[in-house]
Length: 382
Image 1: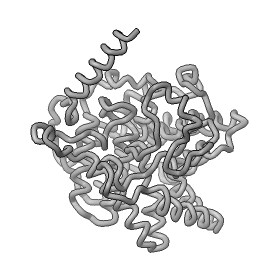
Image 2 (image 1 turned 45 degrees about the vertical axis):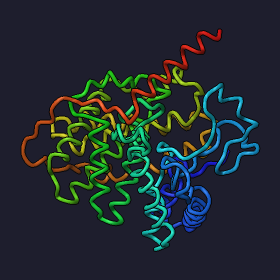
Image 3 (image 1 turned 30 degrees about the vertical axis):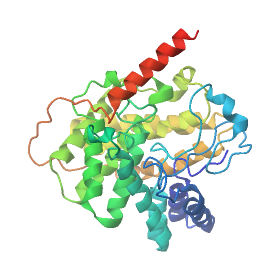
């Protein structure tokens, strides 16, 4: 299939170039960055806000690309859709900016700067209330920047995680407050320090695995707040949310090799994703009070070892996806091994966060009516 920078190969190549000085990694980073900028980003403002300026999906996993391009899926593989919508248009779940950001820092290429900004602006636009006469009566955000897998899920997931990451990268470039404001709005929308995590259905491994992507980005946000010396209410909110989930993970998470019976296709990519759990525990150890740190460090080590050992157990361990996941996420382990006392400051003051508030996107009720009518018509046609 056409890969289209899934999991941010550009960033992984950048890390390896900086780590080793091997120019082959630089060439890979440069060539892929140029390709993504030229081909994989939808440089238009003439389509829907959900698509304009977005990054096209990779094509189908596990099958030949056939007639697919870097921007469309193939009719040859369409039967796999099984009646569902089929296509490769841009989506918040496939938005990778950090490699382009670091490529810009290394080269000064203005096109890379523009690409990061375009992808961040895409996040802002896709979430704006739609216009038209119906939009006059419903000014809620569309939720397209925060949903993962389906329209109704706006909890921790890679959709919101990738959106926040793009906004943070744009903030690093510009220091424009609007990117940080939207970041914090999405954090409040998707996670809460007092939510009932079991209601998120995270035991649905196939569809909810990517909550760790969100938590990793939450750690990135906290690091930014520390750099800004902004130990305010949002810092306290994000920190408490991260630790709330880390405690749940410590009690419930196991390496993916133990739950491969719950996934549709048990490939080598699943155990590679365990490294994300390790990184969440590293962030938790950094931001936790001292009594909890040792527990989180131990969990981080367990999941790091599981990721490496369990990936290597697959004869397909050298395929692109597991390698990229490890490239992009593995460097944190070396940092924390060399800095075992790394810790973060406590929030300034005590804060109350109130009860969790459920987010419902624009036209939520209309979509529910449409889905209900569709189910009724299908039942009557049998």
